[in-house]
Length: 242
Image 1 (cartoon, rainbow, N blue to C red):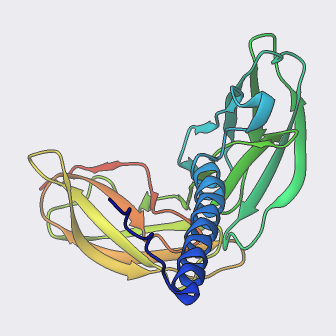
Image 2: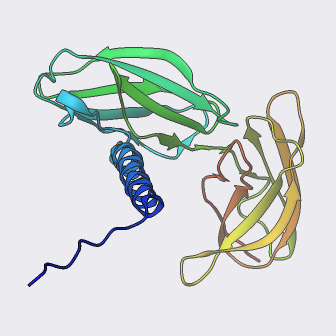
């Protein structure tokens, strides 16, 4: 029996097959090169460091938060690492409008267990972060409330008498809305009148007269804005008589 002759394919077919195989191998290599860096980037987060120090973490928080204008907060956290004692911690801050961090505003060193803290008195809403070498913490935002005072011209008026509600708010926020609120029977506060802050030699001031018919507990609230949180005055009681 005569063996069948081997099939012969055109040279063009063989060349095209080789070209397709080469394109497939190149595309596979490119996809692997793209996926690997993307995966590494996805796993990199604030508070973590890749490579040999991947187990290092840096936390950050602030208490109290919010604070009243003129008062202090403690910005603190912990370094979790094999070598965590005596490490230099650098504090960066970005006050409103948070356009950029002012670097190296304060430094300290970690304790034996990795703890650290900074006492700060920001004048505006401020974002903070810390760093140890190339390791960065998450960002913490400290809100600063308007400092509001509140006075009554008479806390024991006759029923139906006009009483002046007045005070000041610091720092200056001329034109901001001031809400005069009265406590309800459920313990919440309801706005009974509004006025606005106006210019003064120091800070901003407000004044509004109300006719009082019943006893009550009042407070004033300064509206928040982009650079400061809402401010609350102390509560004052009115004892109407007659």
